[in-house]
Length: 113
Length: 113
Image (tube, rainbow over all chains, first blue to last red):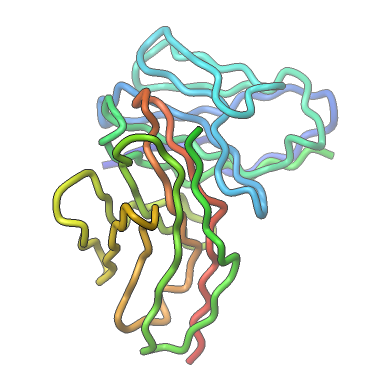
């Protein structure tokens, strides 16, 4: 079982460039999440989705956009990257409801120069 | 608002010694609580969870945690630490809506021989 797969694993961008991070899950989970992890800050929720075609803002959504066109995929976009977006990005998925365990991908390490 | 506090940024223990990692939460209703572990360069893996019932919960890898409502705590324990337990540990609480989880800032564990 692949679980949650994130691509790419590493990326270096120049300020102002755009990119899309892809998250794919094969567990038929309804919910998907994008987090960023920064030293001393833990994980902070960027955006999440409770189903195909629906997305919502999390704690730190500015500068990011997301799309969930298919149930198994959740895309995170940076339209104009900034150095403040240098971080490790994690995708997670779960069944519906707060009792359900989140399964995490291995992360994408992004540097914006 | 929901929040999770992990007071210890970094802990060092000797192999074979006991371990306790602290977690305090702020939440209005019955919390759904989780402990995750993150090995270097990896995503987060669930160690254990508490939803209701017995306040002492057992997890994987010999970990346990005790929910204490009066202290708003959910501390993680292990009787005898192994070198492979060196990792970052995150406490999390599931939010009211069922859509969001709030993570603590993490505790980094170093195990010395």
